[in-house]
Amino acid sequence: MNINDAFPSAYLRASDLGGSPVRVTISKVIFENVGDDRKAVVYFEGKDKGLILNKTNANKLIVVTASAQTEEWAGKTILLYPTTTEFKGDEVPCIRIREAPPQAARTIERSAENPVQATSQGGVTMPSADDIPF
Image 1 (cartoon, rainbow, N blue to C red):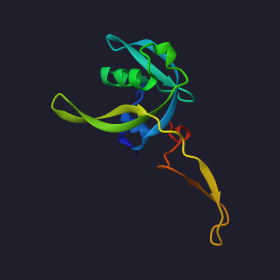
Image 2: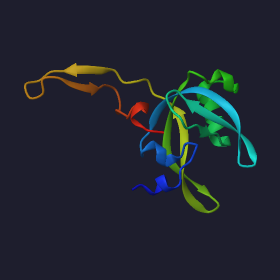
Image 3: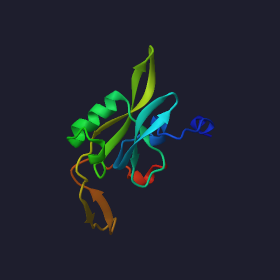
Image 4: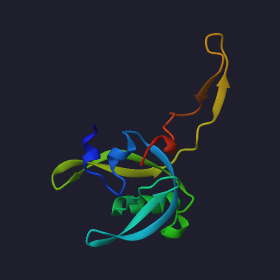
C-alpha cells in the first residue's frame, strides 16, 4: 500500500505524478478557498485534481504561456515534473512546471525479430497524461 493513499488530497501532489514528468493541457484556472487563503488552482483536461499555484509555478506559467492573464492559459500544454525544494529547513517533494517539448513523432519499424514496433524520435518517451491517475 502506498502511504500517500492514507492521506488523500483534493489537489495534485508530487506523489501523484508517479515519479515522472507528465504532459498536460490546461483546461481552466479557478480561484478557490484553500485553507485560510484564496489561491489560483490550475485544472487539466481529463484530470480531476488541480494544482494549487505557488508564486514559483505562477511565474513559470506566465513565461511558458507568454501571458499573465489566467483566462489565456486554457488550451496550453505544459510539463509537470516532480522534484524537491527546501521548506522550513527540510527538503520536501514539490511539483514544478516547464514548457512541454514538441511531441515526438511515432514511426513504425519492421524487422525480422519484431514485425511491428512503435518507437519515438527526437527525445525521451514520457508517460502520457492518460497513464497518470490524478
